[in-house]
Length: 282
Image: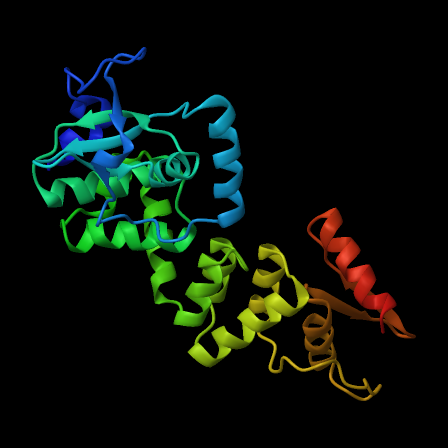
């Protein structure tokens, strides 16, 4: 499938004669029993609670957004909309509205499935990264070509692909929604896998924002342990690092001739509240 064909969008592939007429042009009403799932589905995680909510909605209002399928010798194969398809089955529907796409080969089907999911923002950050990687490696699409196909900036695609360089446990953490893709890109600034894992655990433990994590990484703390007793003879830089580790944000000590001041950075109201809670718990 060429970049040009993908760039025209899914509409250019919709069959002009749907399998059975519907109230929407280009949409067929297809029996659910005749649809098989997509073996190339890039989406791997389906939230059970969200799926149950969709089932309840479908029971009342039906499926409002058609799924996308291709015709096969024995029926239809799902391309995009697996969550709606699953929910419709659980809701005991017999038919579902669907766009029938003119796709002949498995490679074209996989490509469109990836792009449809990315464009609909149905993928978590790691699924999106893996989808870009497949387009890049299996179909030899450049970062520029991928960006044009899915309507994103090239730098967005490149930054997403960088997440695949993270250790497996951190990638799983992003997939589960424990941390964001922004956290993952911040962690990538660390020089070693050991340091990456320590930073990841600290982000989870202290619920750091992305900006707080970036500030912590740029400060290059030497330890990730609990703040130790600060002696007046300790170097200023070492004290700053201990405070950064404790508070999870950038801290600046400003010594004067007598005493001095401490500058603590925060990046949002929630971040400030988190820092205050930490200070009050000491």
